[in-house]
Length: 141
Image (tube, rainbow, N blue to C red):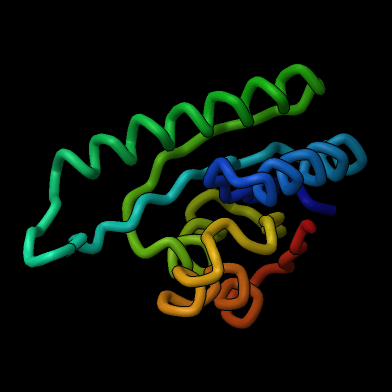
């Protein structure tokens, strides 16, 4: 039913639970997990200073650590898995571009990965994905 499952991860407890749920589904359906870490390509400005390439490299390193952990968990469970580090607007990448790019028919993601203040300012990535995705979305607690 779900040949490929897209699983966005950010290192939060919620995304770790989503990986566990995706593994359970992958076992049931014989799916391949497409685990992604998406770093925003927007410039970060704080106190008049624009942070650029050094911040992105830090995001890339942390993203790879998170991907490696999720990949190891899936492989230990005997699940086929591919990992990808992507740069772009996370909610748009997850809802629209990555399911098509990787052939995913289901997205399994955590309910939140940022703190309440950031969510109020930026909007919920999960809520955006649920509203805009053209494939099924499962939100893990």
